[in-house]
Length: 208
Figure 1 (cartoon, helix red, strand yellow):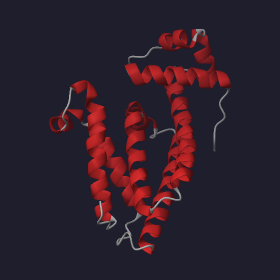
Figure 2 (tube, one colour; figure 1 turned 90 degrees about the vertical axis):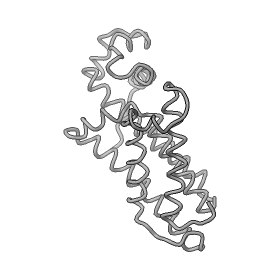
Figure 3 (cartoon, one colour; figure 1 turned 90 degrees about the horizontal axis):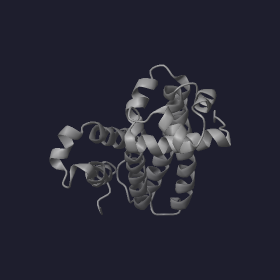
Figure 4 (spheres, one colour; figure 1 turned 120 degrees about the vertical axis):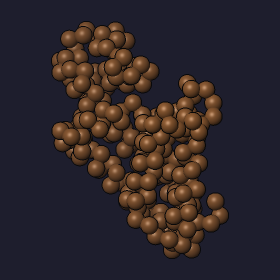
């Protein structure tokens, strides 16, 4: 079920997200957020209860916004050829995972005991899997794809590979060119290129 946020909550969450993206969750204090948002510290407690609970709200807000942007994205690409749609789907997921990489550790912890986060993620993953399935079937029907892998396996491949790269910097940076501060940018390019080759191989698309 979609949670409604007030304008004040959205303002605070937008500010918090920008700061956390820059400084990390641990490096961002409630005072940092309240100062940047030009509100009293007590307002954060009033709306969210604590910094940890605010992060939970922020994650739900981000998932909702991503679902909305994905709906728009899916509408834009729906008339494209199956191979183009699949390529854009892979790029979309990888980009979202890298763009909001600061959520992943939090999500791993919170999913153990926060039911609504599980529901939000399940709904989004299901929507995305349905789209992948639709593209695969169109590709097979038109003769562009020769294989019909399970769409959930394709999503697992994309998400799992991306999260491995994000979470294992010490290992993967050995194989990524560029300066350390550009790791995520360069790692995203590398894993995206590799995933496109892998996914197209799995679905039997030979022209890539």
